[in-house]
Length: 197
Image 1 (spheres, rainbow, N blue to C red):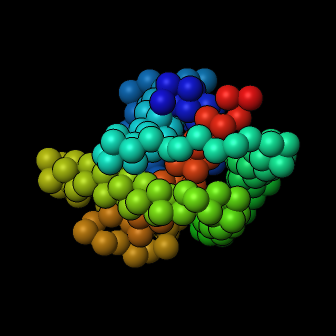
Image 2: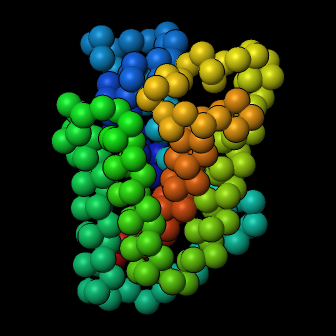
């Protein structure tokens, strides 16, 4: 869990691409005027939580499978895909935020399909992980909205989202949580396999 938390930590550097066009969160610790400590903490904690959420809830550990060079090759492809996903944000920086968000969702969906093909044995785990994180993430936003009414509507930029809200939360956040849960749990399984080399 700690390893995957640190692995996902650098994605906190992507925050400037989304502020203020996608959302404009109130932060306490601003770093260099572009980055904020909260984004790094968010990436750190979600990266670790999603990696082990399935195993924690169901008390079921992923079975170790035989390793070979083919799997090593696939693991490298997964990491390359992750880098391309991050760099797509850099490439589309000059674009309107909405096409950029759509492009990221498409790339993430392709990644999920590739991961399912690579680890067919983890298809059910991936689905459960995706819906578990979706439930956890949306529940946390609903609690925040209950404590601070209108929080999500005030923090997200309506024009930067798909413009659809469900229980006061942008539909984009549902898609993000689902896709992240679907993919990161399988990536975690591959990382475990890779580290056992």
